Image 1 (cartoon, rainbow, N blue to C red):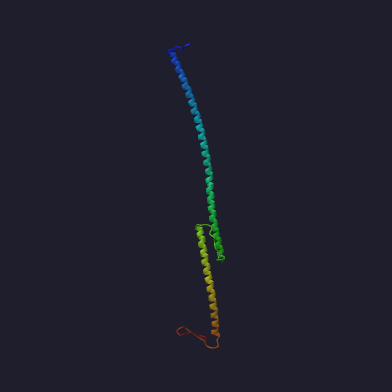
Image 2: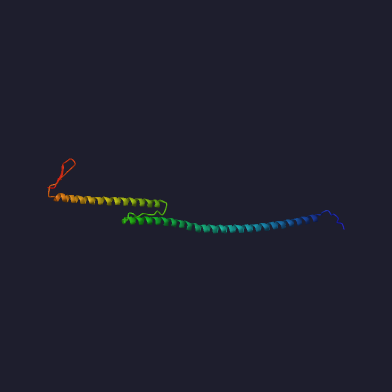
Length: 173
């Protein structure tokens, strides 16, 4: 059987239009659902990103002060140790041990101060040794002068001393 072409009627056109509207509504509903799902998914990702950001920021807020405090404590400890070593050196030298030398613990101003302290200690030791040698020499000279004076004072015969020009300086009797 052959189908005979029937021209579209108003009812057929309305039916086709309604079918098209239903199809468009179904597609529109599917697109709306997909947009809703994407929105939910995006919102979940945003929430996860927020949580990650908050956790990271909270961690940094806790870790950074701990690191800063740790570094400060290390610096304070190293400075305190150097100052303590220097003060111990001063105590040892003030007790009379001028040969004491400090070992610089750092390559900074405190290390330079330790080196300067060592130089001062060496100079004090050399000055002290020079003073001791001069005192020894003066004691020897004094002993000779005492002996000469004793000989001069208690001599039986008269003794006189002349200067370079031949003038009398002293006479024992």
